[in-house]
Amino acid sequence: MNNRLKALRAERDWSQAVLAEQLGVSRQTVNALETGRYDPSLPLAFRIARVFGQPIEAIFTE
Amino acid sequence: MTTAKRNILFGGLGAAVALLATSFLAGIAVGYLRASGVTVDLHAAAFWGILVLSVMAMVGAMGVSVLWMRSIDEAAREAHKAAWFWGGSAGMSVGGVLMILSSLPGAETIVGAAGLFGRTDPTAYMAVGAFALMTLMLIGYGVVWAWWWLARR
Image 1 (cartoon, rainbow over the protein chains, first blue to last red):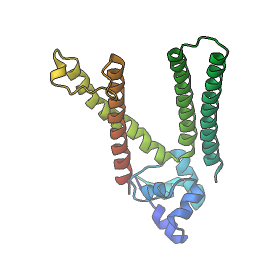
Image 2 (tube, rainbow over the protein chains, first blue to last red):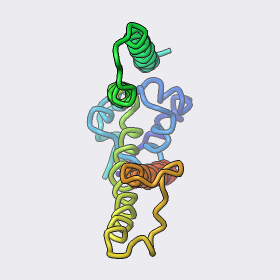
Image 3 (tube, rainbow over the protein chains, first blue to last red):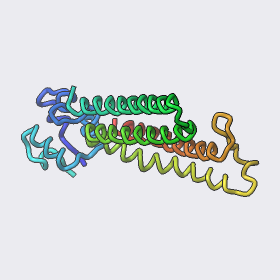
């Protein structure tokens, strides 16, 4: 699964640590998400969508 | 410090204090009974005492593990699940080979059966087997856990 996490984070000039803090996960988890090597659970995907103010399908694509 | 980390810290400290207090009180009780002239079988007392303490230690460790597992995020939890299943199973498989080898007739000539601290009684061999299996599973666990994170850097 692909995602736009890195681009969305860069638009906001957030570090991985800042995003991790907002999502309630570790920086390593944010890194694993951004590289597409870890797919989030539905609850985490909803949290990500809420943090960026976008629908899930606008962030994650198959 | 987050609430989860505080719970883990105080849970761990509480378990350690309970363990020490129980040991202390058991020692005082045995000393008092012996001083009062009551015959106490020290071997039996030590056995039951250590049994109670080890159960307490393991229950405490399990409790702290539950608090800790709840405090980590989902990716960290997935890493541990993968490590438990793949690493633990691989370690157990290696242990399984040793177990089959050790059950063969004349196994003492092909398997280096070592005693525990110089002991060669059956219980010592059983303990060596348990420690060996646990060690193999932990090695497998550690390797897969590290691999899981390295593959997701």
